[in-house]
Length: 115
Image (tube, helix red, strand yellow):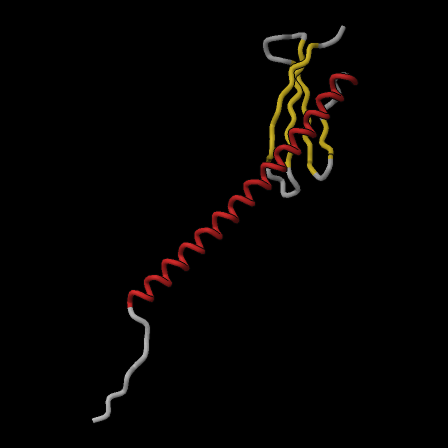
């Protein structure tokens, strides 16, 4: 009788390969998530910068009407209304959206009406 030797991997070798592949896949997923988080942080910081510019303009030019406009690729929704408790104050509410319509930041500023 002729014996043929079958070559293959042992169970230990297969398990080691599986652990290495799992570790590299987990690392790749964590790297992708960190990149996505850092991008959203950048967009939120940019949105806050735009809001600060709008607030500065409001403080210089005075209270303007409600409006929706685009600034640096973001959609900005501005609403101005009287404060509920302080009759001589206005509240300026800014909502900043990205290109997909996702709300990035919502900020409010209270300004005393100039007489």
